[in-house]
Image 1 (cartoon, helix red, strand yellow):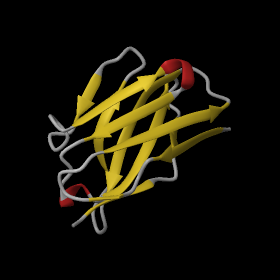
Image 2 (cartoon, rainbow, N blue to C red):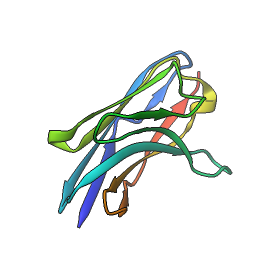
Image 3 (cartoon, rainbow, N blue to C red):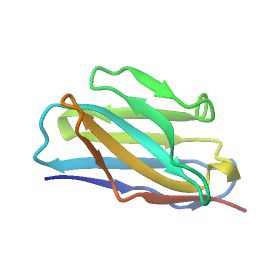
Image 4 (cartoon, helix red, strand yellow):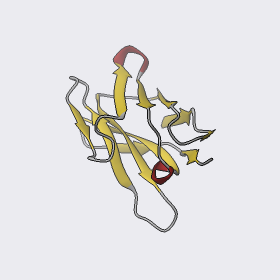
Length: 116
């Protein structure tokens, strides 16, 4: 059993910053990519940023230049530093981990609200 626990979501003003964390625990075998996805009300879940165990990073266009993903392989933890936040960044942010055998695990989500 694998658990992913996100933290760091909050209410922030436009232009502000937040740092999300996601820690994986349990029977983790061969973790590979870890990433952040988000889902706004009435919209589909979308990729925000992804990082492989080797450090290859992919960003959504909306995240480029504002968000930074990083990970600590020893702690099975992934981070998302979000700067210059906009109201359209408001969503529930989910962490996902994929193993080398293509098993996938999701966290429960953390709410990010950008509003004045």
